[in-house]
Amino acid sequence: MNTFKMHKSDFSEDKWLYEITPKNKFLSLNLKEVWRYRDLLFLFVKRDIVTVYKQTVLGPLWYLIQPLFTSITFTIIFNNVAGISTGSIPPFLFNLAGIMVWSYFTSCLNATSDTFRANAGMFGKVYFPRLIVPISVVISNLVKFLIQFAIFIAFYFYYVMKGTVIQFNESVFLFPLLIMVMGILGLGLGMLISSLVTKYRDFSYLVSFGVQLLMYVSAVMYPMALIKMKMPSLAWLVQYNPLAYIIETSRYMLLGVGDVSLFGVLYVVAITTFVFLFDLLIFNKTEKSFIDTV
Image (cartoon, rainbow, N blue to C red):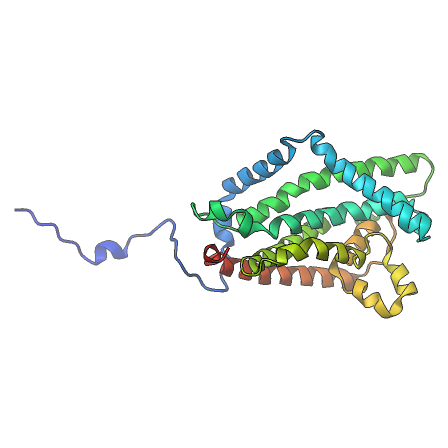
């Protein structure tokens, strides 16, 4: 009779391709795993883009209507009524430059802040890196941003042909990096809020209200120099707000106006890096047990 003997050495040399464990170290970021699932990431991006256009009358035209009407409203209220000066830059173009950057941030923040609760059914059935979902949102929102940026370019050349003196700053080639920083900041804050929402549901109701308040201290509809001159005691709220500095820097690159310094740029990069890495750790920790509380 043949016998089958198994030795410990038969298993010690086995190398597994993937290993799924219930607990990981707190400082594990799992970014390599996200890269292995990059095909799934592209599928989620495609899904996000397609579902936005389905069952809509105007489709992507909604992306044009929102910034245009918001810019017109800001121009009437803040520039014509309140008398906020934008210098030699047309107020409508000044507001449009800030709104399109701010809109990209809010789109990323709002969509990623509900990651766990909105995808609980899918997360409970199949395993894949949960970080893929918020990353796909940030990438898919770039389509919306590019549409709005095209509108900005169209109005930019319209005012130039009318004789308005406007010119891009020489640092405009760094503008894509600035948008990437804004997206990473929105991703980081969204991951933190989505982690908190799994235990504290009322955080989801505070997001939209908090974003509206945050807009007023982010220099969306006024230059940073104005708040320093009019309200110097409260200027620090805007001056140390990384969102305000990103919007101010975007106007500096696109319109050649604004107050930008190397210290401010390094400050924004440092804050964004810290927020993203810290909130990513919280997000990875939450994904292990959120299904029991969501």
